[in-house]
Image (tube, rainbow, N blue to C red; front, top):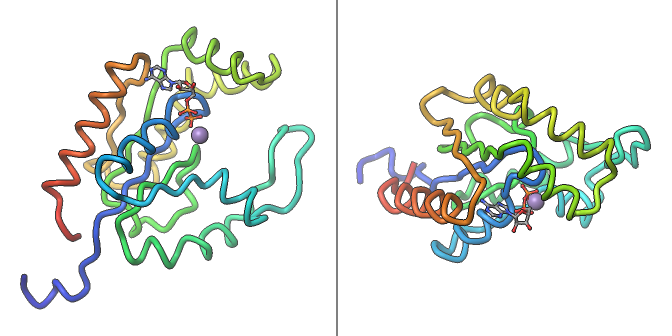
Length: 176
Ligand code: ADP
Ligand code: MN
C-alpha cells in the first residue's frame, strides 16, 4: 500500500448485454459468491422513478440518465458493485474496472424472451439488436478495449464458467 492507496476503492464491474442474455442471473450468482453489491439498474429506475415516463413505441421507460448517474454515484465511488444494465455509454468511464458483455445465440434468446412474455415485435427488436452486436459495440466504444470482455451465455455451464471467471478476477484484482 503506497500513498495512492488512500484513494483506492474496491473494483466495480458492469455486466451488460441484450435483455435475456442472463445479466441478472449472472450478477446474482457473482454477488452471492463475493459479497459484492448487485445493482439492477432497470429495477432501480422503476423503484426510484429514475425515468421521464413510459414510451409506448419502445414499450419501455424513458431513462433519465442524469437521475440514474446521481443515484449511482455514491455506491460506485465507494466500489464493490456489480452493475446490471443493457446500456453502458452514459455511465462515467471511471466507474468500471471490468465490463462483461453477455451474448446469446438467436434461437436461444428468442425462446427466453418468448417465455418472458414479450410481444413478437419486442422479441424481434431484441434479437436483431443481439445479431448486430449493438450492446457489445456500445461497450467497446465507451470503455478501454482491454477491460471489455464478451462472454457466451447460452447454457448453464457457460453461465457457471462466466461466474467463476469473474469471481476469480475479483479475488486477484484488489483495490483499483
Ligand atoms: P437479463 O437480466 O439479461 O434480461 P436474465 O438473467 O433475467 O437475463 O435471464 C433470462 C432467462 O434466461 C432466465 O430465465 C434465466 O434463468 C435464463 N438464462 C439466462 N442465462 C442463461 C444461461 N447462460 N443458460 C441457461 N439459462 C439462462
Ligand atoms: Mn435483468
